[in-house]
Length: 144
Image 1 (cartoon, one colour):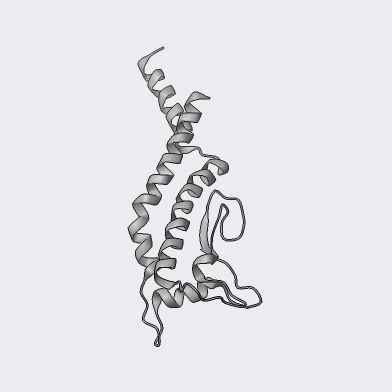
Image 2 (tube, one colour):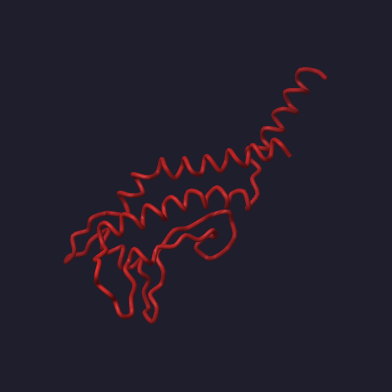
């Protein structure tokens, strides 16, 4: 085999392993990052906007409504994962609506930017989790 053929074959293999990820592989990667975001967002929301001892009759505490889904926002399996707040039962709004007021503020509420700041603070952690999953997939593809 000539040198140019060997290089082309190697390049084809690298492209196949590193860039041609299935939807399942992409979902595995984004799920790892979304889990990190879900855990940290729950933690920060409890620290800043959770009052212990208060029992809400028809609502949940904001921190208890954070969920991660391994689909896009429309529940389609595209390889994306989302983290967000549940819809309030028996109400026409989601808890994300309330979280936005707490994060951004209103003319009556001073926003503390807890979500915005968290996204910036944990970006490296999210990417590290996604990178670790990506490496697992690459190793699996190299073996098989």
